[in-house]
Image (tube, rainbow, N blue to C red; front, side, top):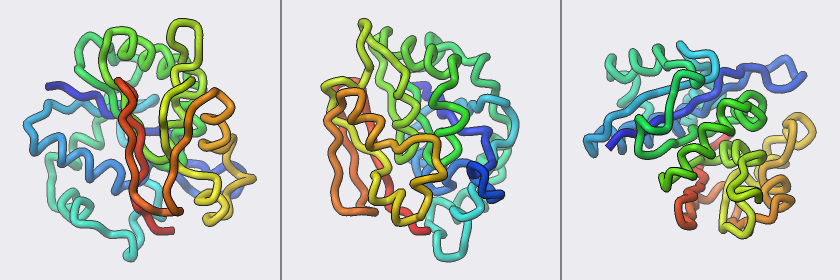
Length: 212
């Protein structure tokens, strides 16, 4: 089994002057689940190299077992520092693609032609595609048989209420929940900040518990 994990290269939180990136727990937790299962992992990002970690995700109150393990694992740290460029990834070399969460992907992956084509290539080949938290936003321009990929599909992701909680409703380029609903998805959610995942055919979406 070979999985392509995709991370953001974007580190600016809109025009706030604050930093963003990928959410460390939403990388570390799946990374070790996959690796412990014997999956061969390739990490990719639009620019390649070291992707930016959202500094909020690494605050003391946000530490998790997976993050602690990551910080003690030189091999994992090296892998993260050497992501390949997304443009160099080909769907035929992997069994599935997984998008790591965080606010960053909303800026550099949601409208990224390389990312869009890659997701379509995976899906058209009968392979599953997965995204967590903000990353279901990467499906906003992905199509399948001339229709939005998410149309009629059960999905989840970072909710409008959660974006309000972190006071970024007017900072992000779009709201994940609103965008997926606009595309015809059946957006499901639990109470804010509750872990939740949905599998609809080959489309896998989820959100993890995180604190801000």
